[in-house]
Image (cartoon, rainbow, N blue to C red):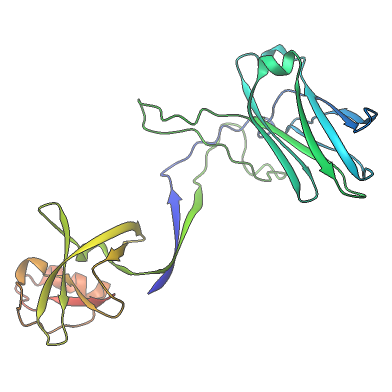
Length: 258
């Protein structure tokens, strides 16, 4: 039984690195209190961010406007925060920002500042030509580790599976559309069993049904065993895998513990 952190790793994820990573056209930012009095007026920086000084407690309206015509045909996402309070606006069309703009309400606690971030809204639809979707990532790059035109490999945690039951992938055989394994029962005999599997992880596969922790699973030699075949199990290691490949006449299958 293991605690599995499932990760997603693309072969290569190309980062479109602009001169300033994640740069968006400068936007006008106007913040007004509940009485309509302007508490802040400024612009977003080259990364699409802004921050105010500490403000009195109260409700505020953050207004974004644009004058850069290059926003036509584009869309932006917005995040405005004040302490633990956070509001978002997604896929706001550039035409709207060029016309009346977008207003976002946020509640501010005493002596807190308001921060905001604008970023490009990507099309989340699957590209039928490549089978991929666009994703956006944001990370510190103050030392310019990534420069325009470079790429990197990204790994992202997408799910945690507590007490995951893992067995080597090669222990699983396909038979008429079902996933099958051979288990060594307490009597030392092979037991062919259907299982249900989940995700793979570093050469292992998650078993969701059909096995219990501690049961011995035959990793090599599934094709040589039948239901009830006597088995002399030995622990499976990478060394035994190499040994088995060199000695095809070996009759005793090796077993691993789930």
